Length: 196
Image (cartoon, rainbow, N blue to C red; front, side, top):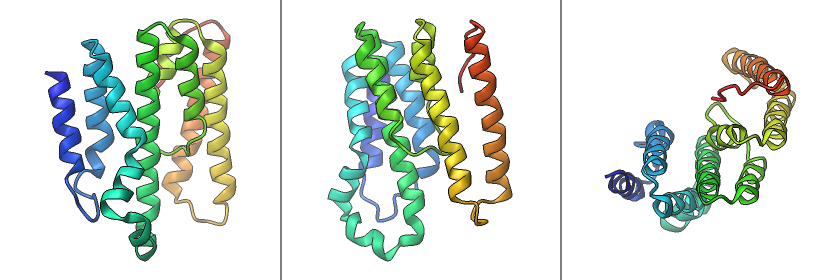
């Protein structure tokens, strides 16, 4: 059932659209829920397929819609598109890392978290892999990920200090920074917070 839902969602998303706008608001939450179901029912190879598809999201769109050329004429939408691609890659690596954990491959799972540290950060992010690693005592890599996330948020604030950030963005970054510091303090005190 979960695998069928996953395939329906993915196939629906693959339907060509010049803007891809009809699923952007739902894409991450729908696929996150499906990924949870696939993992819950131990459909690990289906989960692996989903993760790999998400990582290839940008190239799939560029191939089918020739977005590389058309995005130049719609530069005002590039930021949205880059954000959804980064989120797709983040979800993909998170899913692949959790699959590796299910197979007992801790180092391979940690590698997926390292790949996630090469992506931009935004309002939407996936903490499932970090939570799973934290549950099995891999606190060092999780702390590195949290510190990296906090640094990227600071960098975003610095890079956009010319007033490009809205007051809502500034507020979000400040709140997220406080949460990240709280998580680090809890982990260093030997507790296991729920990262979200």
